[in-house]
Amino acid sequence: MTWRVNNKTFQILAAAEKGRYGVLAAIVYNVEHITAFVQAAENRRSPLILQLFPSSLEQTPSLIYAAAAAATNASVPVSVHLDHAQDFDQIRHVADSLPFDSIMVDMSHYEKEENLAKTTTLREYCHARGIVVEAETGRIEGGEDGIMGTGDLEGILTNAEDVEQFLNAGVDFLAPSVRNLHGDYGPRGPRLDMDRLRQVHQALDGRARLVLHGTNDFPPELCRACVEVGVTKFNVNKLVLDPWHQRLRENVDKPLTRLIGEGIELLTREMEKWMDVLGSSGKA
Image (cartoon, rainbow, N blue to C red):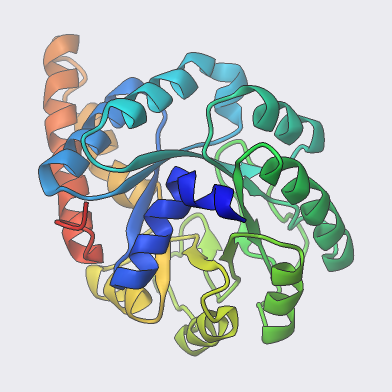
């Protein structure tokens, strides 16, 4: 479909696939995060994806428009993505009314056949409105802020058949289950199935971009390894925001404007570091 070439998230990740680098898709909770992330992207001449959770639609709706304005006015490619959207009617409302370039249609808490059916219906709805779609195949264990976790459901690893079925459902980006977790990994740290991740990328065969969720506690060398096997969209939350949170805790008595300014500066540097790690610096 020719309309995809005008979609910002699609453009950003198509270029990353061609250039063999990863792009940070960073969750934002406030305007300071948006400011720091976009500043880092401009400083490093790097593409960027700003991500919001569905909780923002109710808690901080103005943040959506702040992210969209920042993306529009940035001097480098920046898009706005809704992560882990799980409500059927909400997704249709977002596609109709809000300035998102892409949506993760997360039906992974259903069994596979229902996941595929709902994903296909919502993908058709989003595509008709110029919005590209991400889906999760298999089942990634754990949960994130405001997102329905998998509860007692067992994690299911992605296989080649899953990839083909989701490609047939028409998704643009695919997030596999490769022993990654939503949330923290604990003392042992992440233990990704890199062979499986490589096989998923091979099965995609350029027909959709590869996304990685569950990057808390990743060391730089693991991030680079994931990019090497084909990951283009690298979802981050705690990985980049931990230094921000720590600084807030340690400096809570400082004047607010000073705390905001120092926090933005710190978070900008942190994002620049990870842009260098993923190889997106200088690619905008």
